[in-house]
Every structure is written in structure tokens, then in C-alpha cells.
Length: 363
Image 1 (cartoon, one colour):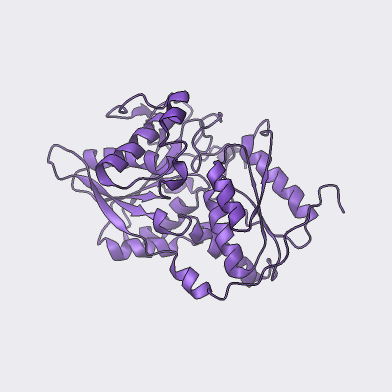
Image 2 (cartoon, helix red, strand yellow; image 1 turned 60 degrees about the horizontal axis):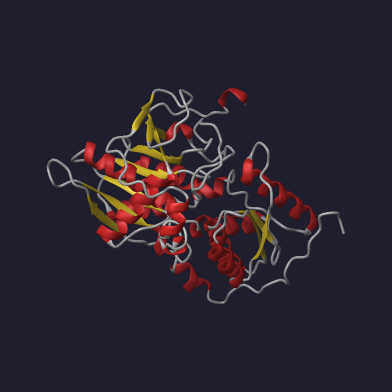
């Protein structure tokens, strides 16, 4: 065997229940969340993607695998290998069962223990890298291990969620659900990690609403929009690399949010509305509330990528939050402002109306 060869799990048979499983993905609720304002009538709409079996990334996982099969890139029973912080992993576990593929996922020590156990229970083999890459952090370390695994497992396939246009195309269905749920949308608010759902939903909605604004939500310490890459506590949004699925030209503005601010928003949602989610949901909520308050009369839709359940020992654990300094009280009412992404390093909620591709001059 080659130096990094590994054995995959035995081939699976495709699930005979595929039609039923496919119907469990999509058609998620859209609910209105009121926001206190001077008029007393403000609020925003939240698309609850946590109602999918594994979260929002069930959609691209199924779509990327289906499209790879159709093109002949993924043969029947071949092993799927991918890097994940968790949510896409759940989607690929579903796709592996549906289409009959063993799945090997590469993660890092930041993956929640519950997520690792869930993935294993779904028949996935999880590999954990032990050291971050000196430049690309944990994501690049995971991607390099993926390449080693691909070289060692004959016929294996990597969806490459960061750069695969099928990741973007998978969200046309979500956009059409929104079209059926709201007669008009002025602003779409999305967290940004691989860039898939912000690009895919916006591209389809823009055909119907030419004036639609796309507002991106990132985490402090992420390099996607030109800030320096730092060690990040939040998972599911942000990046230490530059995914090519991010449609920089589509964004009207970007906001960076800190972990403490996201925790406050998640807990506020739970207490006031009996709905919540993870880091991305908290960050998106903070921004969507501000937009609803400052743009009265406009329809703002925010995408909540998952539910709160996997965050019981992080966001919703007082001991964890105290240990990481995340219980500092309510965030500022207004974001800080940058004129340009490189103006200075941000550490709290900050917005910037200048959005550029950090790699544009290097290509």
C-alpha cells in the first residue's frame, strides 16, 4: 500500500428508502421574530434549516454526491472523503446511507464530542488531525489529510465543499421555498463559511428581486473578507483559507461577530422565542435584528443553518462560557464600522460596506 494508504469500510448498498429520506430534507419553516423598535412593529424572518435531519448542509451533501454520480466522477460504492467541522459531515453521512457510499471525514480537536459520536453512529469513520497548518490553520491541515486519504483509497472521491460549484447550486431549492413563503424580500442575511448557501440562495432570489441586498456574517479571526486569520472559537462560519465559492461581488456589506456576542444572541433567542441554534445562528441573529431595527418596513430574511442541540456543552453550558469569557452581557446596540476590510483588526461586532476578494490581485 502507499505510505498513507488506509482501508475504507466495506461497500454499502443504497438505501431502499431514498424517496422517504429525500422528503425529509427541505421545506423548512420560515418564522417571524419580532424586534423592538421605535414603531413597535419591526422584526425579521428566520429560515429554520435545523428542521432538516442534519441541518442546512444536508442539501449540498445530497446534491454534490448526486451530481458527481451523474458525471461519472463517483462510482457506485466508492468512498467519499471530505473535510468538515461537523454539519456537512452529517449531510454526507446521510448521503452515504442514501446512495450506498462509505464516508471518511477529517476533522480537528474542535469538533464537539457529541458530533463525533453521532457521525460514528451513522457509520462514518472520523479522522482527527492533531496540528494546525502554519498558514491555513486547521482547515488546511484537514484538507492536506484528505489528499493523503484520497491517494490511499482507490476510487475515492472528495466533494471539495470549499470550491465545488454544486455546493452553490444545491441551494436553488431553498431559494424557491423562500419565494413560496414571502411575496418580497429586501435583504438576505447569511453566515459565510464555504460561501455555498449565501451564493446559491442569493443568485436565485436575485432573478426575482433585482434590488435584493446580501449581507454576509463572518466571525472575528476569519480571513474570508480580508481580516487576519486567528485562532477561532466559533465553528460553522469563518475560515482560515479563501473558499472560491464565496461570491464577493454579491455582498452589499459584511459583519464580523465575536463568540460572546453570538452566545448572547443564541440564549436570547431561546429565552424569548423558543428557537435557537449554533454559532452561525447567533451571529446572523445579531445582524438581522440590527437590520430590522434600522430598516423599518423592509423584509429581512435570515438563514439559521442548524438548531441548538449539538451546542449543549458549548454555547448553552455556563461553565464552558465562563471559562472562555463569553458571558459578558448584552452586545453593543450598534456595530463598529470599518471603511475597508484591512483598515484594522476587529474584535467585536463590526460592519463594512466595502467587500472585496482578498485574492483578487493575486490571481
